[in-house]
Image (cartoon, rainbow, N blue to C red; front, top):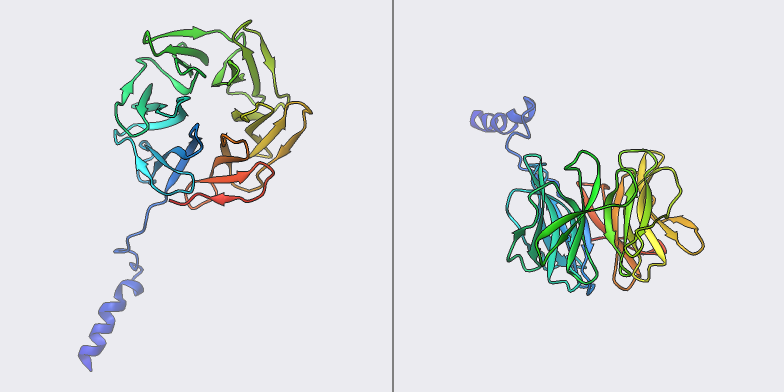
Length: 292
């Protein structure tokens, strides 16, 4: 009987002393973010980390239902701003390490990774013909837009006529959407025509906005807006100028991206655990978490 009680003490001692979790292994939270729908609608590119090292994440591609996940990078950079080439063969993204950010390009199967820029670069977006990439940079102090020519391997500054221009998106009809002025509480979306370089103000909400993306027919603009200290996804009808709120959650929803058929949006959300990618119909129905 003495041996029996000794065994009980040995088993329960860690609990009684408050050390019950010493040998417990927990699965780290996963942080999936910055989803980008492939041009053919069959894949989603995204970046992910496991929560252990907040300075490193890797680039992945998966089917739209979360199956067949393929890791494309393992280089120790923190990545953001993923953009597909128009033909779906390549991906451009920004990678940062030791506070140095550059643009990279990689094939969608993970081969032929190439560093494009030697100076600061963020948020790349491909031109419709696949020959150039527009991106933003703070190399000169202010937030400015630049273009990288893939054929000549040269970059040049792109003037918008607006202060602190950021987060450019190249549209199908050869215009560039961007936000200005950055780092203010009244960031608005602007659209600049590459033919006459005239910038048109698209939103007039006088709040912070990010992650703007046009629907495939360019009749609607989806974006994240910060209202009441919370980020949610909104859609603006460009003809009627009516805005409606798509997501309703206490945790932040950011960076929407349209499906090629214009019927659904994907976005990143902080609704836990960790951070996840969700998919939703543009009328707000059929919200799904993309598990992988």
